[in-house]
Amino acid sequence: MKSKRYKSILLDVDGTIVPIGPHTVPSKKVVRYLNKAKSKVIVSLVSGRPVSWLTDIFRLLNITNPCIVNGGSQIIDPKTQKVLWEKKIDKKSLAKILKIIQNNKLSFLVNDGGVEYRNPKILKFSRPIAIQVSYLNSGKISKYLEKFNKIPNITAHSFPSWGKNKVDIYITHEKATKRSAVEKLAALLKIDISDMIAVGDGENDVPLLIGCGLKIAMGNAAEKLKKIADYVAPSIDNHGVAHIIEKFILHPN
Image 1 (spheres, rainbow, N blue to C red):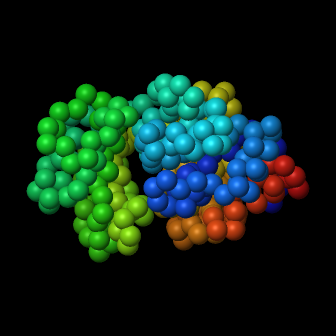
Image 2: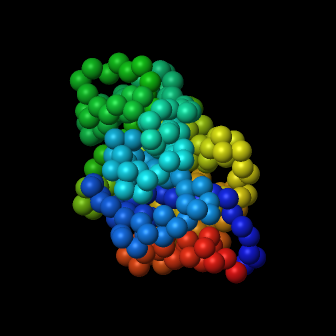
Image 3: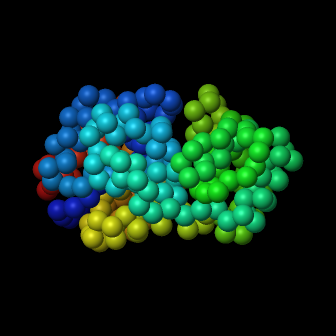
């Protein structure tokens, strides 16, 4: 693999820098290496989580550069939580999504401009940027993904739920993917996407990796992600992000 000096590293959160689940934190080794990396490259997080579920991680890692949140529907300043860019779900698409949810009695969460509403009774929102359908059995995922992805102007993908042995579906505007947000972030940072390293673990990270100069999958990543990756790092249990920083940022070949 050719040696190159990259300018930015984009890190997925769950399954990449922290174990999947609520209130998890990076290992001390990963924290130490990320602090070293910040003197060499721009460090940004890319997550399906809303800002409220990232503030502790931002604080622990002292992240100051713009980050992608809500699955690619927002770019925010982690210090001020100011929204630098966002893409909303339009009203017609929202109504169709909610109809499927109600007809199938699914558990769901609506992110309205950064404020989350779990199974809300009143379905009026001013800035709906993401909808998360939660705690589905894996055998039903394909059926629901097919239903949601037939709706114009949206994209839906699955990822491991915080509920044990369950899967969630995340829905955003079709131009609010991690890929679209990475393009916007590169423009904000005034760098080329080819100068970015992207690291992830789930199938929903495929759009994050595509187009970036160096595509890295964690050792615990989905096979689909590993197939498009330039490099497969050690797993999260083996401090894979620290290994990546050592190999490609601190001491590139």
